[in-house]
Amino acid sequence: MSDPAPESLPGKLFSATLDRLVDRLGLQEQSGDHGTPYLTLESQLPMVEGEVGNIRVFTGGPLFRVVTCSLAAAPMQLDSHMLFAFTPGTSAVPHFTLDSVKAGEHFAFHLDLIPRVDLGCNLPYIDEVFGPLTPLFEAGNATEGLSQAHLSPRQNAIMSPWMLAKRATEEAFSAIDDTVKAYQEHWFSVLEKGVSKTAVAGISPAELVERNLRNKRIIFDPEVDAVWHRITGMIGKDAVDTTRALLIGEDE
Image (tube, rainbow, N blue to C red; front, top):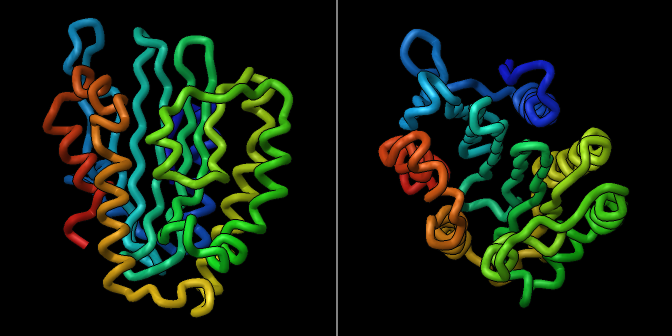
């Protein structure tokens, strides 16, 4: 169902997470020509030739869209897999995201449920949607061999306080699958039950849609997340623009 190299720890974590998502929700892949991934990523670098990854898109079930981006280039010692599962614009259910990476000898991951409302003024939403994540966050955070990844205060502000963004030893990275599964299972539960009216009292569907697009425009802004500048040289501006457009979802 997904195709990272079997010996890759980041690939295995990504693949297992994507497979659970597709199987549980009955998603369908939106393929490119001849059954290929939605977009094949070709290297623009002289030291790396040919295909270096792909963008895959899935739709169906209760979701708006799932977008994945895999990049692997041995000469650059890069093995990176990103997954975003987006709920519809009018939904208060958070988006689910996982990044699974090895760069050089270092492993890293980013795991989060992205809030759909302003947490600073919606305590019932915090308690209902994110409260159950607290013991999972604390257990994952306490895993030996993890250290904090460098994110700017701006990046932290647009995600959730339950985000786990960590660098990891190989042993620690191998141990985080249970935390990823637990986050994903909680997200499945919220997705299936929905968010109560109490938790979103006073927030209209139109307000959810507007905040969602504003939030995603910031999350995927190259001036907020410099990774877009770094990979532009690798896969080209057109591929980056296409990927960002899929993630932001102005077409919803």
